[in-house]
Amino acid sequence: MTTEGTVEAFRRAERLVTQRRPLEALSVLEPVVDVARDEPSVQLLLGRAYFFSAQLRKAERAFLRLLDLDPSDHYARLVLGRTLQRQGRLNEARAQLRLAATMHPDPAYQEALGEINAHIAVRSS
Image (tube, rainbow, N blue to C red; front, side):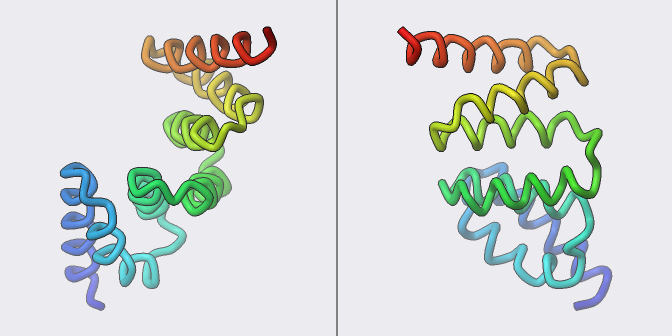
């Protein structure tokens, strides 16, 4: 695949994820991953497509790979936390969401952390 073809496929996969068509996005993204596996943007898009298609273990692996490439990516920590939450792994999710909220004090991150804390509190009752 040429560089132009890779970029075009990546952009098409982005549009498909945005349109909530993750399985199609994964199909389009496959050759991109073969060529650019170590690009953080590719791992993020791959993780999002897996997340939206409920392939949560694969999403988790993509987000962890992204964090290996860039440990300071607060958004990767947020979506990893959400992925872990959907798997019922609340304490692990909380740890990632705490880091994300500390790294990037955005109200949406604080809200996600508050939500997970509430779920843990209910479980503990």
